Length: 128
Image (tube, one colour):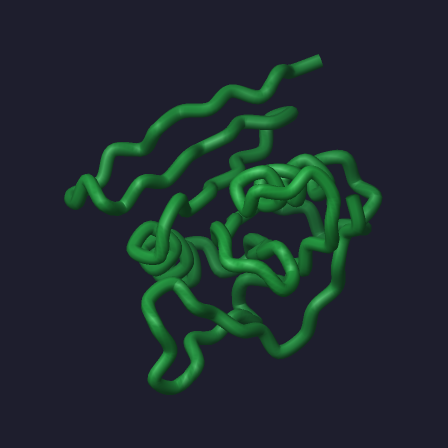
């Protein structure tokens, strides 16, 4: 069984800290602040729109992008989705809670939205 590894991704701006986790061969990206969330979501929407976006419901915190490669559909009980949700919770300061997820191509920036703030047209959730 593969273990998760945390790696810092180097960016142009030190303020944009993005953590990268490899879990069972899937890549999970976590923005550690608003600037990192902006960079993470906009880059993946452009280059990898078939990923999933996750965020802790009702809390400030990281945007998480889960890249599943060519997996067609991901039920919430899938261990990789649950692991990605646990990263969102942990960096939001929670051990348990509800994490919403959506296909990244359904995520949008609200008009006049602050940096790092996103909405989605449809959501599902994982409860941990």
